[in-house]
Image (cartoon, rainbow, N blue to C red):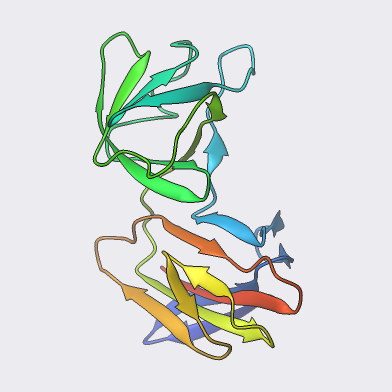
Amino acid sequence: MAGQLYRGGQETWSFLSGTTEGQHNVVVPNAGMFPKQANLKTSADVQITATQTGDVLVLSSADWATKDLQEGDFIYINGTKREVMYIFSSKYALRLRYAFPSAVTAQNVTVSKPSTYRHVKITAVGTVDTATVDGVALKAGSFIQYDNNGGILPIVYSASSANESLKFEIGL
């Protein structure tokens, strides 16, 4: 389900998790981060993994492009996001704002960058009350809305039970 809407003179579009978003022809997973995260890979296209020691992630390789991961970006592992506060000069380690709540050992590193979107509304759609957005449980029909002229930080979501999805309404 994709469609363009107009909100306060701004162009917005909407789509459902678990479908293909028509305007950009991108499959929206039932769980992940918005904006969509990308795998951190080496120049030879090998997935980089990380192991956590306190609030530091030690990476399996330093052979990655600096445009692919920068301070202020977010790492997504095991359904949780953490902000990158500092990248060590060797590029083998990152300091996070907070440690991940569960052990991270040789986990794939995925990255999401803050967006330029100014409006994001996420509504639980379906008959099951188990969808979550940034750890907040949503009952069917309820929503969470983010508005920020400076852009929206990455959002973790999950609607992976049968008969549930999330409707995203995005505005620039």
